[in-house]
Length: 387
Image 1 (spheres, rainbow, N blue to C red):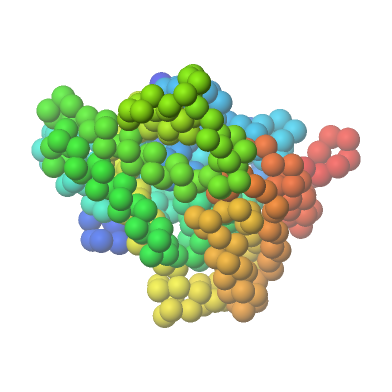
Image 2 (image 1 turned 180 degrees about the horizontal axis):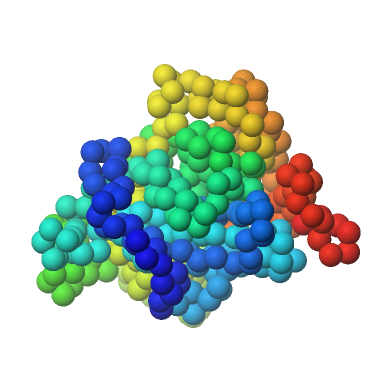
């Protein structure tokens, strides 16, 4: 296998003799993983933090995105002096398997045919994503991660890391997430997938070979999903019923309202950076996630005897992954004898609150990492305070 720097960040390739075998019985070989790192790994290799991105995120957590030119998705949290302090920690973020920005996915070339995989790519699970990440962590020579953190689908990966590799995770922050996808969650994802597949340019998943893209279907999928990331109070505060660049309704199906214009913008901006088939794959991975089902229906069994320190974070306006889901995680961790703290943050920003500047969340993260760093024996920051 080899690693290199390229336009979209760093890459590592695992040769065909080291395949990723998926839960569904598929094989991904060779496997390329795109990733970014920030900060420096210490001599003891004890300060590494793995960040797990959400559904449509990628490895660009804290650098300018090469496609959009915008700051990374967690720029507010990652960097010198920030909670994930890159003056102190070695921060890693990789694109998930099945993704579309450097890691092997349905848009990658199938070595058996020389064409893009399309729907011939094996369906992947959250556990498959974590298996691929563990291969990357092995490649980087890291035995134990100081912390694994992430929100939404990233939080599912955090939980899977703690269950699958408990000896390799010193601390964990599952944020705005759930131990399984609910019926409502699956329903929203199915609407999005059907929007993509109903687009005539989807072409049974073979659109790349035919020089087209199902942009309209993917945009609609993004619009529908984006609504679930927000809260009604936040939408009302920001948009209400305000009209878009006009004083009166047009009595047409133009974007009369600001919220309509906003959603259309979100949809069209999304298609410029994301592959439609990857959207099908990552949403399906979330749908299949049910951690308790892997342990005889008992979520507590997934964490029995875990030595990992946990901080579970929820937001009270998040209706996609409500606080009740986080409480179920906490109860299971308590039943399994794990060390766990729980914080429900008062915010009207909805599910996406973990991605924006939320002072209480920033303080919670900083405090948890400070406590974990002390327990880990990491040296204090310059000035005598811990990160």
